[in-house]
Length: 392
Ligand code: NDP
Image (tube, rainbow, N blue to C red; front, top):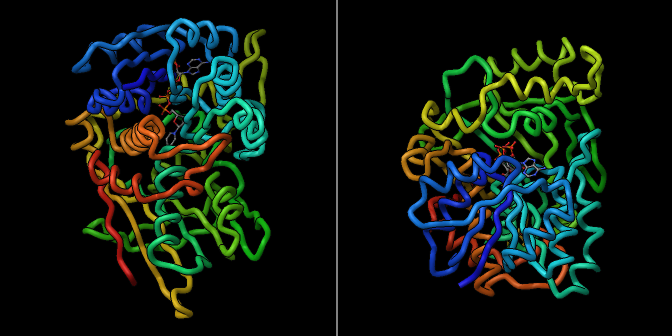
């Protein structure tokens, strides 16, 4: 029985709350807090059990502390935006609350995707006897656990890791993103980077692609090399990885729109003056694009996210593929959200569940691959994200 504070009432936050309500024996009291109280109340109105809601500006540590002192949670699940990670970690330290998030900290003025800001909290969390679990979404999150599971059960040594993220869904909109548009476009337009023989190799965004044949009838799709934050922690914690890459599918239509938006400066994060007021073009673009939450009832098709791994077992080379397939319409039927929010929200709930039940414990700051993958893998099958693995 535990009290949990969930911050962020967006697409992912809504899924996390719904999934926590499905396990009331662990999440006995829930508070959902976000910048806009009405969004929390709208989510709360559709839940099978009563929860508390509150308004908080998570950029303000003092507001977070006041909220935590009032509610006294054991754990805070941060599913606001990456900009709020450090302020929420500060408040957790001040109030003796464990911490979990799904995306690493990013400064607003530069899309960096680096863990060092959060890894710098290691000693403070350790000293406070608290645990901070970083990146408990799907990618990062389940992809880290898949890799740890492969190392535990299939390999003596992992040498190559390809994380492959496919959204074979269609929402019927000319252009929309499946999670927060600002964060999504910052990620996709950043230079691609992969790990090769002990160093990062950088290339132009979306300039490297290949075909990949996805399983279970999804079929061949073009995948594009990108940078993704889990590569940093995985290559650090599993140093035998010689080559680590992250790939994602994009439709031609998405890429065409993105190219035009980039060419005309709408994806820029550099502030400009408009009518005497400072605005950030990408934030303005976010305001006119469809809210990812509104795509739920429109999206059809499936996602397929997994890890293709090469390495050695008993001195022999081995190739292994492990993945999850998630159906957009089934997710919407269950929790009123499309699969991209679902595949992020379910692992956030599972990470929290493992921390609160003592299956995952520790003092300090942890990435997912540092913990025993077995209980997480079991819970994925139980809570809506079953996985399949193949020896190739
Ligand atoms: P949304 O934009 O839908 O939701 C974000 C929520 O955070 C909104 O309710 C927003 O409030 C709230 N928020 C923003 N700023 C503040 C603030 N200063 N104080 C309080 N609340 C605030 O995003 P998503 O739900 O799509 O994504 C949530 C997180 O999940 C992001 O960090 C994203 O990067 C991460 N993610 C991780 C994935 C993974 O696999 N690891 C995949 C997809 C997403 P308001 O409504 O008022 O704007």
